[in-house]
Image 1 (tube, rainbow, N blue to C red):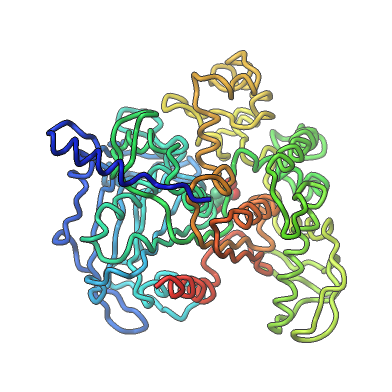
Image 2: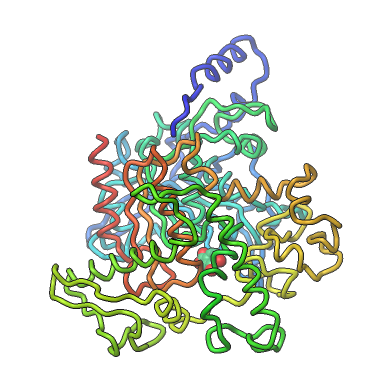
Length: 555
Ligand code: DHB
């Protein structure tokens, strides 16, 4: 749903304050965030064999960037990377083909990284001598350059590696969403002097980046982010805290999200609900020396799975026929999406095995024990699909995440902090558990997380005003903003591979229906691509044809 945007009033106030010589933070931010068209480097790449020159702008997109420490933990946390530029997280690189420099209509292809939900210093593959092929199905940059889009690579703070120079954990949620929004605001502020149109931003990312893409694209213009945007000095934001106001918008035109690891607060419940019945010693790793079946994992999985129904049923999502989407029909709805994809493949002539034949992926060759189909070509239909066996097949193709899949820290004592637990907490805390089961079962005394350290039950802790955990969970969750007064993107392209077990299919079905249920969404293209694993940008021609169609429909 759209809410009227009070840009006029905010602008009038800003002008009035400016005219009266009063101090106005937005003016202060905006004055520091002026785009300079003359400060660029020239990069020469090859596009479809033709030498192509681009102007490249490296821009710190906030007025108060956080100075980061030189040494940062690399993804996974086991090694260190040296940050050459202490502001590389809150920086974007804007690459403009020379012949697009004066084009005020070009779309902005806005790439977030956030891989692993990990802090991402800005980087780009558009460098001197790079080769791009616009007709490739895996070269999204080549396709974007050929289409004449301005390419924007965006760095963002996030979990793990983001330590400020003062030692604080500077990437806590909602930092990546705030940073991406701040970059969007910079583009809006400077729209008239920058190439391309900030009304045509296509946000895109994979996995952690898909999760970030969906959170940003769902929550356009929500005032919830203003206190955080004010802290970093985002364009168009004045004042501070809950009194912060905005004279600029941060909604976007389209989202292109691959395997979005979204809605982290409920991802563990979804994961165990999906996979509990098929977990075994052969598809679930041992923990602390104990094989799956004899350790603590089965009980944890069962308990966590048991919390999912109440959550799903509380969402109030509706199927196309008006029926409520609940855990009673969620498997059937997901199964229908799998079936649709198989039938699309059959229609295209993809060789799909019959029962007893083999599914072949880069990870495993496994017999088909879940799918029957008949007919040929476009009239071929799926005649049987055993969803429980399909799920078992996915877990056989690639071992599942161990229990707890996302909020593992302090529970398993995992020294690598491999779960998303360190996305949450205060800047002084390395991590905080963010789900009830892990909160209750945190076994590390003195880490500040869990009942053991706080003396607070989960609900009490979430409700207490002395922490921001509940807000953090909401601010990174697209489902908290879809179908609300926030201005969600009108166009969504979402893909999650059919053998991707990094998050539950159920989570993607919920995201899909939340998008579908939002009346301000004009089109959503959602698929579970056949035998595709955890990855993105494998269908570049299809994605870019879709992007072009949406842009063409909005000249
Ligand atoms: C990514 C993968 C995960 O399994 C996860 O939990 C978060 C992010 C990723 O590939 O970005």
